[in-house]
Image (tube, rainbow over all chains, first blue to last red; front, side, top):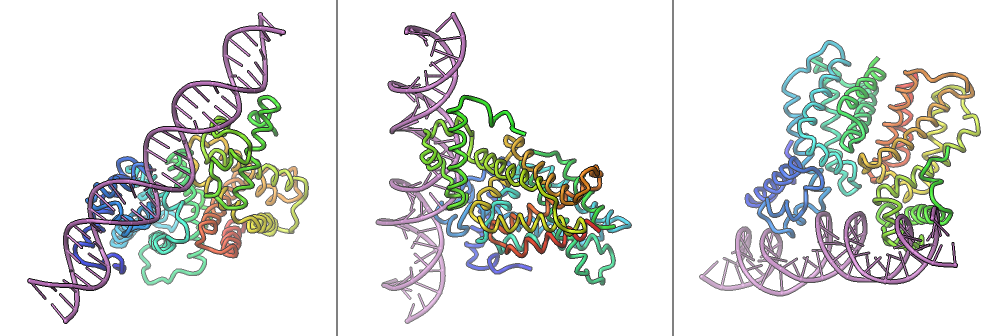
Length: 197
Length: 197
DNA sequence: TCCAAATCTAGAACGTGTTTCAATCATACC
DNA sequence: GGTATGATTGAAACACGTTCTAGATTTGGA
Protein backbone atom coordinates (compact mmCIF):
# COMPACT_ATOMS: atom_id res chain seq x y z
CA UNK A 1 0.00 0.00 0.00
CA UNK A 2 2.70 2.50 0.90
CA UNK A 3 4.74 3.29 -2.15
CA UNK A 4 8.47 3.71 -2.21
CA UNK A 5 8.53 7.46 -2.40
CA UNK A 6 6.48 7.86 0.71
CA UNK A 7 8.82 5.98 2.99
CA UNK A 8 12.18 6.64 1.38
CA UNK A 9 14.81 8.86 2.97
CA UNK A 10 15.54 9.93 6.49
CA UNK A 11 13.01 10.94 9.08
CA UNK A 12 13.73 14.58 8.41
CA UNK A 13 13.11 14.05 4.72
CA UNK A 14 9.82 12.30 5.27
CA UNK A 15 8.82 15.15 7.55
CA UNK A 16 9.74 17.74 4.92
CA UNK A 17 7.75 15.87 2.32
CA UNK A 18 4.73 15.72 4.58
CA UNK A 19 4.98 19.44 5.40
CA UNK A 20 5.18 20.28 1.71
CA UNK A 21 2.07 18.27 0.84
CA UNK A 22 0.21 19.66 3.85
CA UNK A 23 1.04 23.20 2.83
CA UNK A 24 -0.05 22.42 -0.73
CA UNK A 25 -3.44 21.14 0.38
CA UNK A 26 -3.93 24.07 2.75
CA UNK A 27 -3.15 26.64 0.09
CA UNK A 28 -5.27 24.85 -2.50
CA UNK A 29 -8.17 24.61 -0.09
CA UNK A 30 -7.95 28.32 0.67
CA UNK A 31 -7.49 29.74 -2.80
CA UNK A 32 -7.47 27.09 -5.51
CA UNK A 33 -4.96 26.44 -8.25
CA UNK A 34 -3.65 30.00 -8.50
CA UNK A 35 -3.06 30.24 -4.77
CA UNK A 36 -0.73 27.27 -4.81
CA UNK A 37 2.33 29.34 -5.58
CA UNK A 38 5.64 27.59 -5.31
CA UNK A 39 7.20 30.32 -3.17
CA UNK A 40 4.21 30.23 -0.82
CA UNK A 41 4.32 26.44 -0.55
CA UNK A 42 8.04 26.58 0.24
CA UNK A 43 7.52 29.28 2.87
CA UNK A 44 4.60 27.53 4.55
CA UNK A 45 6.44 24.21 4.57
CA UNK A 46 9.60 25.86 5.94
CA UNK A 47 11.82 24.73 3.13
CA UNK A 48 13.79 26.62 0.51
CA UNK A 49 12.40 26.96 -2.98
CA UNK A 50 15.21 24.81 -4.34
CA UNK A 51 14.36 22.06 -1.88
CA UNK A 52 10.74 22.11 -2.92
CA UNK A 53 11.84 21.58 -6.52
CA UNK A 54 14.13 18.76 -5.46
CA UNK A 55 11.14 16.95 -3.97
CA UNK A 56 8.64 17.77 -6.70
CA UNK A 57 9.93 18.77 -10.12
CA UNK A 58 6.92 20.95 -10.96
CA UNK A 59 3.75 22.47 -9.58
CA UNK A 60 1.77 19.85 -11.47
CA UNK A 61 3.72 16.97 -9.89
CA UNK A 62 3.15 18.54 -6.52
CA UNK A 63 -0.59 18.89 -6.94
CA UNK A 64 -1.14 15.51 -8.54
CA UNK A 65 0.85 13.83 -5.77
CA UNK A 66 -1.27 15.65 -3.21
CA UNK A 67 -4.37 14.50 -5.07
CA UNK A 68 -3.09 10.93 -4.91
CA UNK A 69 -2.66 11.18 -1.14
CA UNK A 70 -6.23 12.45 -0.73
CA UNK A 71 -7.63 9.78 -3.01
CA UNK A 72 -5.75 7.12 -1.09
CA UNK A 73 -7.49 8.26 2.07
CA UNK A 74 -10.93 8.35 0.45
CA UNK A 75 -10.57 4.95 -1.14
CA UNK A 76 -9.26 3.35 2.04
CA UNK A 77 -12.26 4.67 3.92
CA UNK A 78 -14.73 3.54 1.26
CA UNK A 79 -13.22 0.08 1.38
CA UNK A 80 -14.22 -0.40 5.00
CA UNK A 81 -17.97 -0.32 4.43
CA UNK A 82 -20.46 -1.94 2.10
CA UNK A 83 -22.11 0.53 -0.25
CA UNK A 84 -25.84 1.03 0.41
CA UNK A 85 -28.30 0.41 -2.43
CA UNK A 86 -30.06 -2.56 -3.96
CA UNK A 87 -28.91 -2.28 -7.56
CA UNK A 88 -25.56 -1.48 -9.16
CA UNK A 89 -27.08 1.75 -10.46
CA UNK A 90 -28.14 2.82 -6.96
CA UNK A 91 -24.82 1.87 -5.45
CA UNK A 92 -22.73 3.61 -8.09
CA UNK A 93 -24.84 6.73 -7.84
CA UNK A 94 -24.46 6.62 -4.07
CA UNK A 95 -20.68 6.57 -4.30
CA UNK A 96 -20.62 9.28 -6.93
CA UNK A 97 -23.12 11.36 -4.98
CA UNK A 98 -21.12 11.14 -1.77
CA UNK A 99 -17.94 12.02 -3.62
CA UNK A 100 -19.52 14.94 -5.47
CA UNK A 101 -20.93 16.30 -2.22
CA UNK A 102 -17.52 16.06 -0.60
CA UNK A 103 -15.92 17.88 -3.50
CA UNK A 104 -18.58 20.59 -3.39
CA UNK A 105 -17.66 21.34 0.20
CA UNK A 106 -14.10 22.14 -0.84
CA UNK A 107 -14.53 23.75 -4.23
CA UNK A 108 -11.17 25.49 -4.27
CA UNK A 109 -9.33 22.32 -3.39
CA UNK A 110 -11.26 20.45 -6.05
CA UNK A 111 -10.49 23.09 -8.62
CA UNK A 112 -6.79 23.01 -7.86
CA UNK A 113 -6.47 19.24 -7.95
CA UNK A 114 -8.67 18.72 -11.00
CA UNK A 115 -6.87 21.38 -13.01
CA UNK A 116 -3.54 19.81 -12.16
CA UNK A 117 -4.85 16.39 -13.13
CA UNK A 118 -6.08 17.67 -16.48
CA UNK A 119 -2.86 19.47 -17.23
CA UNK A 120 -0.54 16.65 -16.25
CA UNK A 121 1.67 15.29 -19.00
CA UNK A 122 3.49 11.98 -19.44
CA UNK A 123 6.06 12.77 -16.74
CA UNK A 124 3.31 12.43 -14.16
CA UNK A 125 1.95 9.19 -15.61
CA UNK A 126 2.69 7.16 -12.47
CA UNK A 127 0.79 9.44 -10.14
CA UNK A 128 -2.08 9.71 -12.63
CA UNK A 129 -2.24 5.96 -12.87
CA UNK A 130 -2.45 5.64 -9.10
CA UNK A 131 -5.39 8.04 -8.99
CA UNK A 132 -7.13 6.23 -11.84
CA UNK A 133 -6.75 2.90 -10.03
CA UNK A 134 -8.23 4.25 -6.83
CA UNK A 135 -11.20 5.69 -8.70
CA UNK A 136 -11.94 2.52 -10.65
CA UNK A 137 -11.53 0.49 -7.45
CA UNK A 138 -14.17 2.61 -5.76
CA UNK A 139 -16.65 2.32 -8.62
CA UNK A 140 -16.03 -1.40 -9.10
CA UNK A 141 -16.61 -1.93 -5.41
CA UNK A 142 -19.92 -0.12 -5.78
CA UNK A 143 -21.05 -2.16 -8.77
CA UNK A 144 -20.28 -5.43 -7.07
CA UNK A 145 -21.91 -4.41 -3.81
CA UNK A 146 -21.53 -6.95 -1.02
CA UNK A 147 -20.64 -9.70 -3.42
CA UNK A 148 -16.98 -9.41 -2.55
CA UNK A 149 -15.99 -12.68 -4.14
CA UNK A 150 -17.29 -11.80 -7.59
CA UNK A 151 -14.55 -11.10 -10.05
CA UNK A 152 -15.31 -8.02 -12.21
CA UNK A 153 -15.83 -8.97 -15.83
CA UNK A 154 -14.18 -7.24 -18.78
CA UNK A 155 -17.52 -5.60 -19.42
CA UNK A 156 -17.61 -4.31 -15.85
CA UNK A 157 -14.18 -2.79 -16.22
CA UNK A 158 -15.08 -1.18 -19.52
CA UNK A 159 -18.18 0.34 -17.97
CA UNK A 160 -16.20 1.61 -15.02
CA UNK A 161 -13.74 3.31 -17.32
CA UNK A 162 -16.49 5.03 -19.26
CA UNK A 163 -18.09 6.20 -16.03
CA UNK A 164 -14.73 7.56 -14.92
CA UNK A 165 -14.37 9.43 -18.20
CA UNK A 166 -17.80 11.00 -17.91
CA UNK A 167 -17.06 11.92 -14.32
CA UNK A 168 -13.84 13.64 -15.29
CA UNK A 169 -15.53 15.60 -18.07
CA UNK A 170 -18.35 16.65 -15.76
CA UNK A 171 -15.87 17.67 -13.10
CA UNK A 172 -13.97 19.68 -15.67
CA UNK A 173 -17.13 21.56 -16.57
CA UNK A 174 -17.82 22.25 -12.93
CA UNK A 175 -14.38 23.40 -11.80
CA UNK A 176 -14.08 25.69 -14.80
CA UNK A 177 -17.39 27.27 -13.84
CA UNK A 178 -19.28 26.23 -16.93
CA UNK A 179 -21.78 23.91 -15.23
CA UNK A 180 -23.35 23.53 -11.80
CA UNK A 181 -22.87 20.79 -9.24
CA UNK A 182 -26.34 19.47 -10.03
CA UNK A 183 -25.32 19.19 -13.66
CA UNK A 184 -22.50 16.92 -12.56
CA UNK A 185 -24.88 14.64 -10.68
CA UNK A 186 -27.38 14.74 -13.54
CA UNK A 187 -24.95 13.77 -16.25
CA UNK A 188 -23.53 11.02 -14.06
CA UNK A 189 -27.03 9.70 -13.53
CA UNK A 190 -27.73 9.65 -17.26
CA UNK A 191 -24.43 7.95 -18.04
CA UNK A 192 -24.84 5.33 -15.33
CA UNK A 193 -28.40 4.62 -16.46
CA UNK A 194 -27.26 4.15 -20.04
CA UNK A 195 -24.39 1.90 -19.04
CA UNK A 196 -25.83 -0.25 -16.26
CA UNK A 197 -28.97 -1.55 -17.90
CA UNK B 1 -23.68 30.58 -39.45
CA UNK B 2 -21.22 33.45 -39.18
CA UNK B 3 -21.17 34.81 -35.67
CA UNK B 4 -21.02 38.48 -34.77
CA UNK B 5 -17.38 38.59 -33.77
CA UNK B 6 -16.23 37.20 -37.07
CA UNK B 7 -17.78 39.87 -39.23
CA UNK B 8 -17.69 42.87 -36.92
CA UNK B 9 -15.36 45.81 -37.48
CA UNK B 10 -13.62 47.22 -40.47
CA UNK B 11 -11.94 45.29 -43.20
CA UNK B 12 -8.56 45.95 -41.66
CA UNK B 13 -9.81 44.61 -38.36
CA UNK B 14 -11.17 41.44 -39.89
CA UNK B 15 -7.83 41.00 -41.64
CA UNK B 16 -5.92 41.46 -38.39
CA UNK B 17 -8.14 38.96 -36.67
CA UNK B 18 -7.60 36.44 -39.45
CA UNK B 19 -3.82 36.94 -39.37
CA UNK B 20 -3.80 36.42 -35.62
CA UNK B 21 -5.74 33.17 -35.82
CA UNK B 22 -3.63 31.96 -38.75
CA UNK B 23 -0.44 32.67 -36.82
CA UNK B 24 -1.89 30.87 -33.81
CA UNK B 25 -2.68 27.74 -35.80
CA UNK B 26 0.72 27.81 -37.52
CA UNK B 27 2.62 28.10 -34.25
CA UNK B 28 0.46 25.47 -32.58
CA UNK B 29 0.94 23.11 -35.48
CA UNK B 30 4.70 23.56 -35.35
CA UNK B 31 5.32 23.36 -31.62
CA UNK B 32 2.17 22.75 -29.62
CA UNK B 33 0.78 24.66 -26.68
CA UNK B 34 4.10 25.96 -25.39
CA UNK B 35 5.09 27.30 -28.80
CA UNK B 36 2.02 29.50 -28.97
CA UNK B 37 3.68 32.41 -27.17
CA UNK B 38 1.81 35.65 -27.20
CA UNK B 39 4.83 37.68 -28.35
CA UNK B 40 5.42 35.21 -31.18
CA UNK B 41 1.78 35.29 -32.26
CA UNK B 42 1.83 39.08 -32.29
CA UNK B 43 5.08 39.16 -34.29
CA UNK B 44 3.91 36.59 -36.85
CA UNK B 45 0.56 38.32 -37.26
CA UNK B 46 2.24 41.73 -37.61
CA UNK B 47 0.37 43.33 -34.77
CA UNK B 48 1.54 44.77 -31.47
CA UNK B 49 1.24 42.72 -28.33
CA UNK B 50 -1.32 45.15 -26.95
CA UNK B 51 -3.45 44.74 -30.07
CA UNK B 52 -3.36 40.98 -29.73
CA UNK B 53 -4.70 41.35 -26.21
CA UNK B 54 -7.37 43.74 -27.42
CA UNK B 55 -8.63 41.07 -29.81
CA UNK B 56 -8.25 38.08 -27.48
CA UNK B 57 -8.08 38.68 -23.74
CA UNK B 58 -5.93 35.63 -23.01
CA UNK B 59 -3.96 32.83 -24.60
CA UNK B 60 -6.76 30.45 -23.73
CA UNK B 61 -9.37 32.60 -25.49
CA UNK B 62 -7.10 32.76 -28.49
CA UNK B 63 -6.60 29.02 -28.73
CA UNK B 64 -10.19 28.09 -28.03
CA UNK B 65 -11.38 30.54 -30.68
CA UNK B 66 -8.92 29.04 -33.14
CA UNK B 67 -10.23 25.59 -32.21
CA UNK B 68 -13.76 26.81 -32.89
CA UNK B 69 -12.76 27.99 -36.35
CA UNK B 70 -11.19 24.61 -37.17
CA UNK B 71 -14.20 22.74 -35.84
CA UNK B 72 -16.50 24.90 -37.90
CA UNK B 73 -14.62 23.87 -41.02
CA UNK B 74 -14.66 20.18 -40.11
CA UNK B 75 -18.32 20.15 -39.26
CA UNK B 76 -19.30 22.06 -42.39
CA UNK B 77 -17.44 19.53 -44.47
CA UNK B 78 -18.93 16.54 -42.67
CA UNK B 79 -22.39 17.99 -43.21
CA UNK B 80 -22.02 17.77 -46.99
CA UNK B 81 -21.83 14.01 -47.19
CA UNK B 82 -23.73 11.05 -45.79
CA UNK B 83 -21.69 9.01 -43.33
CA UNK B 84 -20.84 5.51 -44.58
CA UNK B 85 -21.88 2.52 -42.48
CA UNK B 86 -24.99 0.41 -42.00
CA UNK B 87 -25.53 0.80 -38.28
CA UNK B 88 -25.29 3.78 -35.91
CA UNK B 89 -22.31 2.08 -34.28
CA UNK B 90 -20.48 1.79 -37.59
CA UNK B 91 -21.29 5.34 -38.61
CA UNK B 92 -20.27 6.87 -35.29
CA UNK B 93 -17.05 4.91 -35.28
CA UNK B 94 -16.40 6.04 -38.83
CA UNK B 95 -16.74 9.71 -37.89
CA UNK B 96 -14.65 9.28 -34.75
CA UNK B 97 -12.06 7.26 -36.68
CA UNK B 98 -11.72 9.87 -39.40
CA UNK B 99 -11.45 12.61 -36.81
CA UNK B 100 -8.90 10.75 -34.72
CA UNK B 101 -6.80 10.06 -37.81
CA UNK B 102 -6.89 13.72 -38.75
CA UNK B 103 -5.83 14.72 -35.24
CA UNK B 104 -3.01 12.19 -35.28
CA UNK B 105 -1.56 13.85 -38.35
CA UNK B 106 -1.22 17.13 -36.48
CA UNK B 107 -0.34 16.03 -32.97
CA UNK B 108 1.13 19.35 -31.89
CA UNK B 109 -1.90 21.27 -33.07
CA UNK B 110 -4.17 18.80 -31.33
CA UNK B 111 -2.18 19.09 -28.13
CA UNK B 112 -2.35 22.86 -28.14
CA UNK B 113 -6.07 23.08 -28.83
CA UNK B 114 -7.05 20.29 -26.45
CA UNK B 115 -4.99 21.70 -23.60
CA UNK B 116 -6.57 25.10 -24.10
CA UNK B 117 -10.02 23.53 -24.16
CA UNK B 118 -9.37 21.68 -20.91
CA UNK B 119 -7.97 24.72 -19.18
CA UNK B 120 -10.68 27.13 -20.27
CA UNK B 121 -12.71 28.70 -17.48
CA UNK B 122 -16.14 30.32 -17.41
CA UNK B 123 -15.00 33.40 -19.33
CA UNK B 124 -14.61 31.20 -22.42
CA UNK B 125 -17.98 29.52 -22.00
CA UNK B 126 -19.37 30.86 -25.28
CA UNK B 127 -16.54 29.53 -27.39
CA UNK B 128 -16.60 26.21 -25.53
CA UNK B 129 -20.30 25.93 -26.14
CA UNK B 130 -19.81 26.48 -29.86
CA UNK B 131 -17.27 23.69 -30.04
CA UNK B 132 -19.51 21.36 -28.04
CA UNK B 133 -22.41 22.04 -30.41
CA UNK B 134 -20.32 21.28 -33.47
CA UNK B 135 -19.12 18.02 -31.97
CA UNK B 136 -22.56 16.84 -30.94
CA UNK B 137 -23.91 17.85 -34.34
CA UNK B 138 -21.32 15.68 -36.03
CA UNK B 139 -22.03 12.66 -33.83
CA UNK B 140 -25.79 13.09 -34.06
CA UNK B 141 -25.53 13.28 -37.82
CA UNK B 142 -23.59 10.00 -37.74
CA UNK B 143 -26.13 8.24 -35.53
CA UNK B 144 -29.04 9.26 -37.72
CA UNK B 145 -27.25 8.39 -40.93
CA UNK B 146 -29.14 9.29 -44.07
CA UNK B 147 -32.39 9.61 -42.18
CA UNK B 148 -32.18 13.38 -42.23
CA UNK B 149 -35.77 13.93 -41.23
CA UNK B 150 -35.52 11.97 -37.99
CA UNK B 151 -35.55 14.15 -34.91
CA UNK B 152 -32.94 13.03 -32.34
CA UNK B 153 -34.58 11.72 -29.18
CA UNK B 154 -33.60 12.76 -25.64
CA UNK B 155 -31.90 9.41 -25.35
CA UNK B 156 -29.91 10.10 -28.51
CA UNK B 157 -28.74 13.41 -27.15
CA UNK B 158 -27.76 11.87 -23.83
CA UNK B 159 -25.79 9.20 -25.62
CA UNK B 160 -24.06 11.78 -27.77
CA UNK B 161 -23.02 13.74 -24.72
CA UNK B 162 -21.57 10.66 -23.04
CA UNK B 163 -19.67 9.81 -26.21
CA UNK B 164 -18.33 13.35 -26.29
CA UNK B 165 -17.19 13.04 -22.68
CA UNK B 166 -15.38 9.79 -23.32
CA UNK B 167 -13.79 11.27 -26.40
CA UNK B 168 -12.50 14.25 -24.46
CA UNK B 169 -11.05 12.04 -21.73
CA UNK B 170 -9.39 9.79 -24.27
CA UNK B 171 -8.01 12.77 -26.10
CA UNK B 172 -6.68 14.15 -22.84
CA UNK B 173 -4.85 10.90 -22.19
CA UNK B 174 -3.40 10.99 -25.66
CA UNK B 175 -2.26 14.63 -25.82
CA UNK B 176 -0.64 14.33 -22.41
CA UNK B 177 1.29 11.33 -23.66
CA UNK B 178 -0.22 8.79 -21.30
CA UNK B 179 -1.99 6.67 -23.91
CA UNK B 180 -1.56 5.84 -27.58
CA UNK B 181 -3.76 6.82 -30.51
CA UNK B 182 -4.99 3.24 -30.76
CA UNK B 183 -6.06 3.46 -27.14
CA UNK B 184 -8.22 6.41 -28.12
CA UNK B 185 -9.91 4.45 -30.88
CA UNK B 186 -10.26 1.41 -28.64
CA UNK B 187 -11.90 3.21 -25.75
CA UNK B 188 -14.21 5.00 -28.16
CA UNK B 189 -15.19 1.66 -29.64
CA UNK B 190 -15.96 0.20 -26.25
CA UNK B 191 -17.98 3.22 -25.18
CA UNK B 192 -19.96 3.34 -28.41
CA UNK B 193 -20.67 -0.38 -28.21
CA UNK B 194 -21.93 -0.02 -24.65
CA UNK B 195 -24.10 2.94 -25.52
CA UNK B 196 -25.53 2.06 -28.91
CA UNK B 197 -26.85 -1.41 -28.27
C1' DT C 1 -11.60 68.72 -45.16
C1' DC C 2 -10.92 68.78 -40.35
C1' DC C 3 -11.38 67.21 -35.70
C1' DA C 4 -12.32 64.11 -31.84
C1' DA C 5 -12.41 59.56 -30.62
C1' DA C 6 -10.95 55.14 -31.16
C1' DT C 7 -7.34 52.12 -32.39
C1' DC C 8 -2.66 50.69 -32.96
C1' DT C 9 2.33 50.55 -31.83
C1' DA C 10 6.63 49.94 -29.28
C1' DG C 11 8.35 49.04 -25.27
C1' DA C 12 8.77 48.85 -20.30
C1' DA C 13 7.27 46.53 -16.30
C1' DC C 14 5.16 43.04 -13.15
C1' DG C 15 3.98 38.23 -11.34
C1' DT C 16 4.82 33.54 -10.96
C1' DG C 17 6.90 28.97 -12.49
C1' DT C 18 11.43 27.36 -13.06
C1' DT C 19 16.62 27.23 -13.06
C1' DT C 20 21.02 28.13 -11.22
C1' DC C 21 24.76 28.84 -7.93
C1' DA C 22 27.72 29.65 -4.03
C1' DA C 23 27.67 28.90 0.72
C1' DT C 24 26.19 26.27 4.70
C1' DC C 25 24.60 22.16 7.01
C1' DA C 26 23.83 17.13 7.97
C1' DT C 27 25.09 12.42 7.50
C1' DA C 28 27.77 8.40 6.99
C1' DC C 29 31.99 6.37 7.01
C1' DC C 30 37.01 6.02 8.52
C1' DG D 1 37.06 13.41 15.95
C1' DG D 2 37.66 14.34 10.87
C1' DT D 3 36.18 14.38 6.36
C1' DA D 4 33.81 13.50 1.91
C1' DT D 5 29.44 13.45 0.00
C1' DG D 6 25.13 14.91 -0.60
C1' DA D 7 21.14 17.87 0.99
C1' DT D 8 19.52 22.42 2.13
C1' DT D 9 19.49 27.31 2.02
C1' DG D 10 19.03 32.07 0.25
C1' DA D 11 19.08 34.75 -3.44
C1' DA D 12 19.55 36.03 -8.06
C1' DA D 13 18.12 35.38 -12.69
C1' DC D 14 15.29 33.87 -16.61
C1' DA D 15 10.86 32.92 -19.39
C1' DC D 16 6.46 33.90 -20.62
C1' DG D 17 1.58 35.57 -19.73
C1' DT D 18 -0.29 39.81 -18.77
C1' DT D 19 -0.78 44.89 -17.85
C1' DC D 20 0.27 49.59 -18.60
C1' DT D 21 1.71 53.94 -20.87
C1' DA D 22 2.85 57.53 -24.12
C1' DG D 23 2.79 58.66 -28.55
C1' DA D 24 1.43 57.71 -33.63
C1' DT D 25 -2.18 56.42 -36.80
C1' DT D 26 -6.70 55.52 -38.48
C1' DT D 27 -11.53 56.31 -38.71
C1' DG D 28 -16.06 58.31 -38.79
C1' DG D 29 -18.90 62.21 -38.51
C1' DA D 30 -19.69 67.49 -38.83
